[in-house]
Image 1 (cartoon, one colour):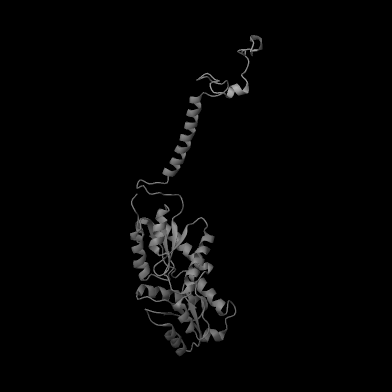
Image 2: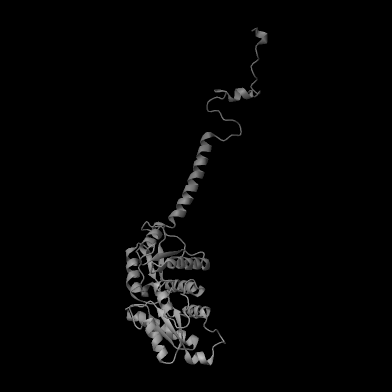
Length: 326
């Protein structure tokens, strides 16, 4: 190649061809392209942004962790619906449906189910799962009629065994919402509604309030008070009777009313779900028998009321409160 045909060297102000810009060694080591940030500045800026995000996320997480290392959050305490448990095939489905109704009424609330025996999940398993999920506090709401052995012994034992801070709500008990549910179940079964009560039925009618029964005298007294409130609502005598463990039994109560001239006797099923006791009580009815309380809207509202009531109770006077020190 002759000197005249050799390519001329580029002038200092002439940009390199694209191929030359991409070629290794085209730039002087450490040289800075005009308008581009320095390498160190870019690295430091990216690192600062990353550390800022990490710090913000860590601060958010730590705001929910107490000095004991457990995670706390701003959600309200979980509601644990405590059922007894049954081998009857419809019981579990009914209790689950009731839980779903409660969730519909309070979508912001964590509502879980735990059983005292037989059905899964058992109450200790439900509490353990809540603890693993980072829930700090729970209210145990018994799906039980009155303050018997389960409310006084089984629930406090479960509360003592968990790391959660727990409160135990009152059972359904003698509340207007329970009376509303019992009354409407009787109407569904054929009891005459408002304005349809005849003089003959007032003279010859009566109701047996059928409950599970308990050897605890406080439980029996509570059931009798419920019977008294239902009697005021219906305008006829209402007698408490039991499927087991207490007297009188349902058939005996029916016979005692008949001996008093009350031959038009209905059975009010004071059971929370279908089961063996509810079925046997219904068979003793000489006239009509209502369905169990089940998923009646008033029952769902009453359970939520018991939850709210437990939260309003001052901790210094709540006998069933167990607090884990922070």
